[in-house]
Amino acid sequence: MRTLVLEQGTPFCSVQDGGRPGLRHLGIGRAGALDGLALGLANRLVGNAPQAPALECLLGGIRLRFACDGWLALTGADCHARLDEVAVWPGWRTPFRAGQQLLLGRPRVGLCSYLAVDGGLQQPQILGACAADLTAGLGGGALSAGSELTLEAAPGLWQPLGIRLPLAPESVRFLPGPEWAWFQRARHQLTHQRWQVSPQSNRMGLRLQGEPLVRQGGEELSSHGLLPGVIQVPPDGQPIVLGCEAQTCGGYPRLGMVIRADLWRLGQLAPGQGLRLVPVTRSQAHQAWLRQQGYLARIELLLAKEAETAC
Image 1 (tube, one colour):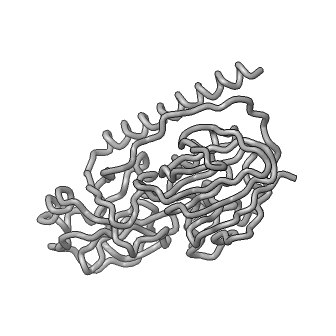
Image 2: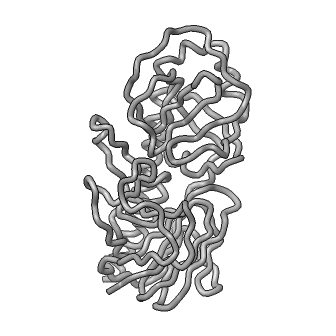
Image 3: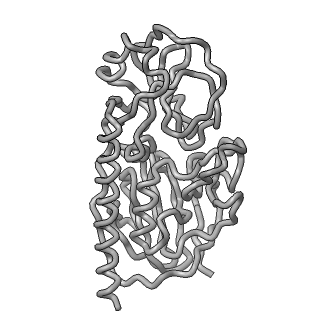
């Protein structure tokens, strides 16, 4: 049996996959990886399906030991990983041997690091996913020291391989929301000041700190459906950008919606980090999505050519 053992854990280490989309009408959020792009890249590098279960670690601080041979890939925030004192570079497929120890340190930039292992993690599914929803209590929860994880059968990789990872985010693009008109005087302030990510942020959402936004109009809202990426403005004027474990409904004004191509960036914004919010048009959002899909297509082509060479 292929296994790995978590020898040192944190409350911010869990098993995540693509989450549980399509259940919000039942009051069940998507959850899953905070940085879905990084999850998919790590899995692709080791031959797994893009949404396969992998380890998500916020702010590093874990140590694990492999009880088998295989291949690993690290993506997301550079956590200065070391495999038996040898540096492991993010964005690379790296071999490991039974008995070797992997240490993930605290990243200097970014928040989430992802560890994928060839074959993927063998985890029970709840409502169609293995993801640990830490807010709702679905899935396995945070991993603690001593946790043993079983790995699926390996696909048979044969050589190291690296890809270019996206740069750490400095801005997030958004489309104006239904209540955008309520904040006409605050729009320049919203988009030109540098917001700071609050320490009160979590997987439910990023709380931003800055000069409060003042609402000029509108009535009280009834509860309405919400999605990850919605930018809400509560009464204190400090925006909240909803995360992957966000509630399924709420009543705060919706100032905007983070574009699909930038949702991964929300998973790399650590407490204290600065952030700019940039409004874009639907056409610009669509072009950003096409560029991201082109980037993934080039990686798929590289991996396909490498697999052909192996044969």
